[in-house]
Length: 345
Ligand SMILES: [Zn+2]
Ligand SMILES: [Zn+2]
Image (cartoon, rainbow, N blue to C red; front, side, top):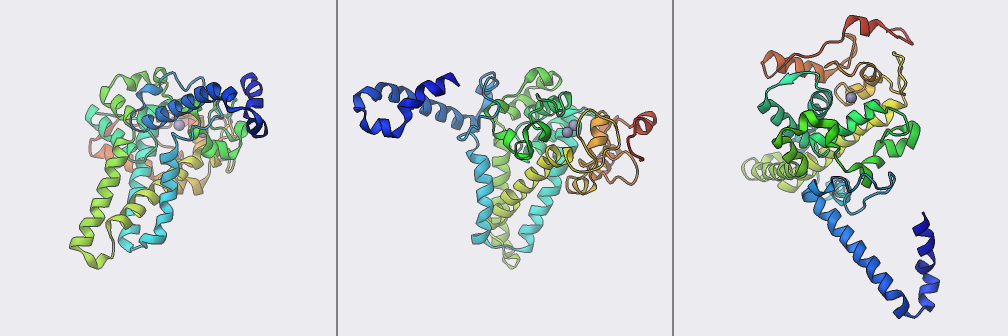
């Protein structure tokens, strides 16, 4: 604050116009050099975020890293390209399929496996799950799990990075992921995962898998245009729908769990946070909308605690366990399910 006030006079454009440039230049040059360095640093972190460690934790919690979030803004802007590429049933179908698969990867793998370890799998399975979660363009598995564990520890308290109660709806929904202070991965919070070099690799180069997915989706469109022209698609049309539009839907559906499920819905269990159960958000996110259940007992694989609470992710995980790909799914103990109700089941 002190720095801002003391340098404010020199920044006043009315003063700069009258002040001989020789006085302002050294200061300006230092400032500009610092600005360019910070821009280069932010841009380099698009590709390799290993140098983030420790550097962003001290930043102001509401300070947005504009250069760093250019790709995120670009993802949104690219959706507007539907105006030029048009649409086709196959492009919409691929977008919907990639929504479902990647939403499942976020809730089933990034959330229920990496963040809460609610079931077990092999090391190869773990790697595949991390890659699948990474395709959703929500950064690396260690970053995601570390921030989510922090959310459970401080839910709706001041320390919570995305609490609507503390920081307002917009910040809880999307603002917090643009903040300089939230780019860092606190490896201490995920020591059980950080010991695997393959997970650290994905976390470090967290845009690599999304880039490969984008290329694959584009190639699919080109292939269909060549060999099945009657489908009426193209490389760019498939890229815009299958990658950009689908990614933005997955992102904002995921974000509703941080924003809307802490505001709207029914509270079944007594908990210190504002978490709610919301059937619409449960359908949209394949089961994450049973958020009050989940905050009350995060150790269970299922988040719909009763048979009528539709939890599509849980059903898919049961299918994976019947194939032997995952095992030891944590149940909801009967005692837990029935205790501390503030409203009837
Ligand atoms: Zn929550
Ligand atoms: Zn959770």
